[in-house]
Image: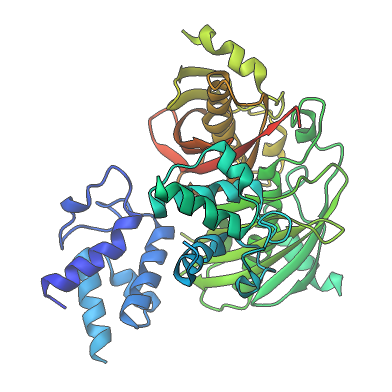
Length: 83
Length: 83
Length: 149
Length: 149
């Protein structure tokens, strides 16, 4: 899940929920979803549900709380897929 | 434009705008868009704009008025494409 | 049966003149049904439209949200041990308006859960007039804001 | 400048207490900008919420529709010889609510034409509070109903 392909996939899932003033090209692995990318809590849920669909995984409240950055999302997906 | 392929394409464009109680499978060439399929005037505009995009054509007020049935839509598209 | 749902209506954060729920007729973890009769004396009819009162589409949306989203949400919270008690704030609405609803008309709203995850509830809503005509429909979502935080 | 748009506001089919346009600051065939100050005495604050007045999301939607869709539509009709004169009825709304707006706040609405075809106008709308914060945004569409037919 550390390869470029997966990062692109996750970015594609996040992009529709970015506010207009955030350039998708400016997003990095360290971008904080709420504080930097200004994604609100309602959209964060949509992103999590889209990730679940895309990777056929089930995320829990704990995963949601740990998912602070784009990199966190990649790590959580990788961990879930290994199970 | 009389072949099955195009009919299917047009049906695909119309389907999202059908009311829930209309079975897309019940639609025929003779189905009246407003009277039988219960498509309202707001959605009829969306359908026309989607047809324009799909077939790279420009429809006018006259075309809109003549487009009573699914078959009319196919004929109008065919006529526009020949120009 | 209807008294069984009074405790839900009592928890609604709205009051007259911005309460658009008269009663509920069905409520499970999957769907809710309720009704409201529009009061001809409601303030909004004085301005919508000039000399031609019609229920504003946004007021139909509010009726759909109060019955179809918030009543359903209050019920789900009751049955969801880990959820915090709180208020449901509307975050998104997507509506289609099909038929006008006039002063005095009684409408029935049905809300169906699409999902309730991570404190976000999304519901499909439909509003019918007394003769069974679908007057508006759509999807409405809200986030449960915890009163603890 | 603002007086130049008074004839548009005069044509609006709404009146107080359901008129949510104080003035327009810009209007072309592509976009409209206008403003409204929410009146603390508005009826809806008495019920939304109980003892905690916040402007209902659906009222923000109405403000967006009146400025961003209907004022723009009235202007487009004026400049569109073949269009019938009439009323614009909202047919669809798709909104996201981002920040609460409180009684007394002055908001600015910008509406941008997405398309105006076959008497249907669809606009992208955004509502900002005085400090420039985006409070809600979305898309609203309406059909011009001819008064002749």
